[in-house]
Length: 488
Image 1: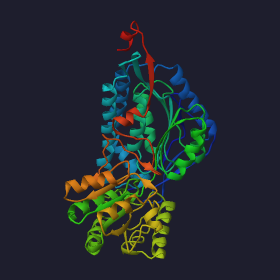
Image 2 (image 1 turned 90 degrees about the vertical axis):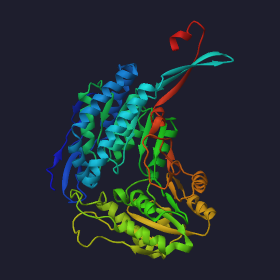
Image 3 (image 1 turned 120 degrees about the vertical axis):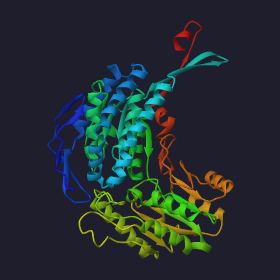
């Protein structure tokens, strides 16, 4: 399917669509056709400065933060309703931007609206204050918005991740400057338009498209109270260093090298489904992917056959074809990165049980075969570094205790899983593996529960009630008896 080039030449700043100060642009290339599908402004530091200034004024002087929560939620609900009418178009954009198969996009994109409404329900039902009885007298604990939020999203989950970042921040009463990834900025314009049309006060939401210069200027701006970033661990470290000097609040959801532990009694069909969803979906471009698969040494070959079947169950091809289940990687650079890791795995002595190259029948597009490595060790770079592609590394263990040690022998701690029919053993493993998120007999992305990592996988939590709380600051007001009624 071909799409005409979409040209956006303005940024949303202070409630108005404004021309950027520079004529520089970003080109959006379809990873399936290698053709240009869009062009957006490449904002510079001066544009970011104006956007943060608008957000700062909207927060400090505007009506949004003082508006009753239910009124804020009603405005945001209108925006979600407007987006519902555009979901088919947004899905096509996401397919064009990053190569997500259309059959997946049609299921996944509507989930963003549902997740947004979940946050609105949370906001409506979360008290903005509660009065506590203490030995020192009554005290009110207030939930106040954290302030101006710099929200920076990655390219592997356009639209859904944008809604999950933007809606709870706005519902909490914050102002937002949102910067989508330069590879996938087109869908963000629909969000900006819906928020503007819904009656959101000027400056409460600002959209700035750009590359590294814009991102660095946004993170470094003294008018920003909190940075919410999802992306690589390397970028997260740079952001943390920048923010530490000003004590800017941080929320970092970073990389992963998650281990799925397959125990002796695991059901093969359950494992196959879990690995298919947990590693090969989204062409492996998922931070929480099961990229290390731990299997009993005594049954390595049998479990390898199951994993190979999971990899080969995908049809790689044109994402606009409804029969396609795996699209391309997001860019030429990303494909080259994945292929370099495949070559590195071979050089380290690992072997591929399937995949390891580019599909012969796909000469155009950034495609790669789903790949399973065997004869690998946890010390190898393919088992330690995030590849961010459809590449599984099979590791063996002799005991459950060894499997847990291998799983924990990682710089990352985002996700993980255990596959077993023994519920007591499943609970033991789940408690023993040091990660922020864990699944039993599945790969589950639960938008109603907190999501995030430990170690090099980040700081803080998104999603669930904690995803809303992340945009609140707590203020204690020590009360007198006369003032107590005004805080109940």
